[in-house]
Image (cartoon, rainbow, N blue to C red; front, side, top):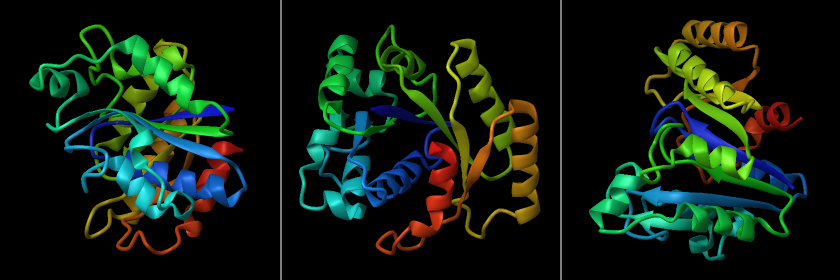
Length: 228
């Protein structure tokens, strides 16, 4: 079993889209993957239209009709870091229980795609950051970053933070959600700088996707480079 933790350089960079593409690719390869969102915030429940799990389950044909609640361990209504979203509801996240649930739900699957909330230093509890969870569950980090201006700094800081914990990222994917799209020269320069200073591959760029109901197999080469 291989576990990959999809972390972002910030909130809203496209972790869920990258998770979706990876899940579709793994099913295409005949694998038996599992998607987990340990802490979901900003929605009422896993079935809410703003739920990342619902988005994944709605757009992976092998998951349609299955209960997306099984992908979410903790869910809180306010769009905040998990610690503060839980506190707003007078609740606390139990780190040990969170880790136990991830391990329990992972049994019997070939690959685990775990999507974080926010970036590496988003607090889960008073004593646990997202990067601590990655370390505890021994998952391989995959970094999702914006393709646009500013991403060089954000990606390189994320890589450096992981390496300070002796966590080596598998690779980096840039996501261009801009409309109009980010200038192609800037994207190439961003990719060049990230690879030059991190010595990590940028597996590719995911463009803005207008219709997620259409096949995303044109993005599978990114997955092949990441998981090779």
